[in-house]
Length: 493
Image (cartoon, rainbow, N blue to C red; front, side):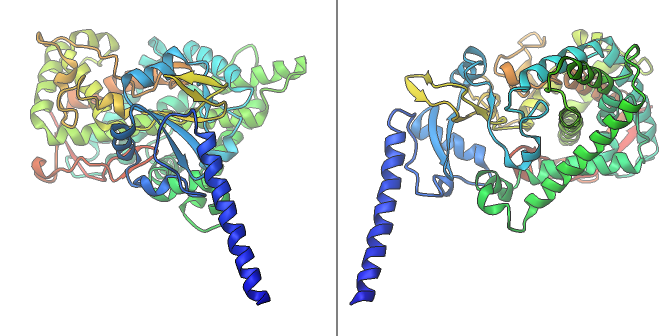
């Protein structure tokens, strides 16, 4: 009897806890946007496809509207789907939603650097970084010359393939890697440099792993999963090694720093650090400098590299589009002059193709998570301070009212009836507002100049029938990861 009494008491206790948990979730959600009812502990994770979270968001938006609430584990998330809701958060209410939601895979970067920083230093570091990058040619002639110089080395490496099939992952990726390395560290790598290949391998591997179901789970249940074996340990190890490299570079620069003659972005950060030391402030520590460099090195290499790689695959599948590009390049640039940014004004088809590549591949579909910096109202709902907010970018890039047949690759999405380039306000692959990508200008320039240079000198040839090329990503999560493939580049006569 005593044992039965204890069992009943435990059962009543567990049921009571469950009811209290459910009541708390209902009460705390009283004025929040609608959403599916969450289960205790796991929340709505079972109602989300971890292999394709963006697709799950789209499906839930059809059911609950453009602003809805999810619980990923115990973490409350408000998802924004569609142009009106995303624009309101990113642009119209950018101050209230300028925080950065926590991403446990980058826990050692928290409150440091630019991308994952949600601490008191992020605004100052971001503002300083933008100003300094602008001084070093962000969107200006200095970067144009950097890219043109690197394009020459890229052409040399492509010629060495002698028309044979090759994997473009690292060969093409070295070009954007060297452009950002020149800005950050005043250095460039040879295309067979072991350190460069190691860094790019870690960038590439992390981008893939962050897009797998296990990392989606880890980023929402890190408290439980951090002690288990799994690919999150590889991501954390790579993040640590990348930061160790940028810290080493910062220390090397510090030893030879000449404040009267800064050589690169790293020198400028270190000079700001030394200035703050003298004034007694502590925002720019060596650790913070290293994370800022790691942020820019990863983002400046991997996103542009992946976009170029995906773009070349798309052009192999659609040789008729490549042929139109060849004709435009021949007409505007010719066979020998180096492509320049000014050419974009006379090359609407190339401009449209570059934009359509970015729209179609939808590289970061769910954006990086934002966070409400204060209690606020959004479309009649209460969004408490600290709530994670996800302004989905794919809901803009794949809007079927703005882009007819959004699932099809069509440069005409960015051309008017007269064949002139047509900009769309729905084109937000770099996000927008306070957290917009700091390298947007550089990335746009690289994509136009490098693609133009490659197609000026080579025809793309697929080892398989173009009709058999599968453009579907191999993973969808943090990003959309392109499939592995090989291509041949044939010199144009």
